[in-house]
Length: 573
Ligand SMILES: Nc1ncnc2c1ncn2[C@@H]1O[C@H](COP(=O)(O)OP(=O)(O)OP(=O)(O)O)[C@@H](O)[C@H]1O
Image (cartoon, rainbow, N blue to C red; front, side):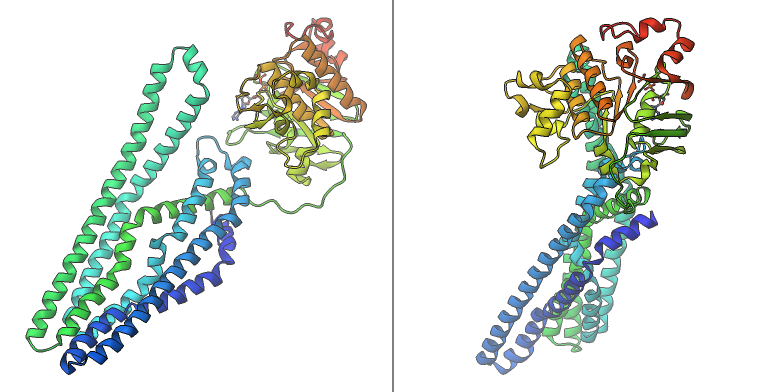
């Protein structure tokens, strides 16, 4: 948390000079705020007694100029603060985005990563809000109080007592509303997540007759969220109304006390009115703080959450760029745990894979195949042992560069909202069409894509849109093959493929091998390991056997012959 806070501080450091200028503008604007009370004093005490129209006119012109200057300064400081907020956001967003995607930012059950960009927005809003400027005005409230004391000490003490009560109310407000706002935020996130999920699974909900039950669950989540928000808003409103009315009453009380002092002949009538105006001005920042307190709380809570997120996902140290590696993979005593899991799900696994070779990974459900695939892609770093690609550990490669050298087809392929071409090119903004088409051809998806009405420009969604399961998987394979990766990792690649698709997959594996790449296939189905030279058998997260495919199959499985023959992809496992 402390490291994250220091990092955010650092990102904000370049704004210090601008904050200094806001403080300066605030100082001058607050001094100019004395124009009204001073004018009042002069009118009552000088113009009235001397009955001079010229003095009145001269004072009026001066006041006009001073008020115009005050307005301009007020405008300038709000303008600068909004720019400071926007600048902070643009400096921090890349780092916060990558921290939100970082493995340690995504612990199951907590929402730090999910709210990160919203938290950054809350900080930006706070920096540009009038309530933040009120903090710059607060020290000037003391000067105004001092000025009231120069009129008469009774007036000064009344203003101090009123201000102290308002500040005490602000502290109480913070104490009472903070837990309610945190609860409201929590419920809001849960409700949003549920409604996203229900919307994405609309077809399934209809098919399973879950519409009524889903609605009830959604309504409960919404009610909890809006109930918590309502309770926080009610309390905030109560405090806000109290402070506003109390401030108005205080001004009248000030006038009454001033009149008493004037009647006692201890002060002029001008000082009475000027004192009342000065007190009003001194209490403005306090009132602004109370009214804008929810913004302060959201911004502060966002800042704390961002500090925690950044602390959990420290910045990547710059790495010396390495040349394109040869496809030699060595795993040694590899031990991997999913994020937040108490125990590793893959333990002490070792194997070596040479360029031009393919390795199959088989084992029952939950044996750790997908865990191994994620570790090999660098998504889940090892907690023990090493993975080396051409001699270098995966951590020695820049994650983005490593990602481009690895083709990964996850077990559940999900596409990004965009066109098929954009999905194949991994959203690269300057992708060359030739490379996209080459990848699609290698995945044998080219003709299938051309058969769609808009071909490569067909828009798809996360769930695939109008594409079938097999079509999604082929586009996923084309995406994995894009950019001719050194290492191809396929997790259950033929789960949705027909015979033709299975053949295309085997051809793609052969092509990668022939070009000196390495392929690792996690499989349940026999057809997928037909092209594999070696086989790793996992059971309960440990290696049960590793070696040449046929020898391992012969020693582990009794129906080895069936398993290696490249029969229809839909055949039994
Ligand atoms: N994100 C996760 N958090 C915690 N545990 C996980 C996570 N993902 C997987 N596991 C656990 O790790 C173990 C291995 O899962 P993994 O997905 O690697 O198995 P698998 O061999 O690929 O299974 P399948 O063949 O069913 O896909 C399982 O016990 C699973 O519950």
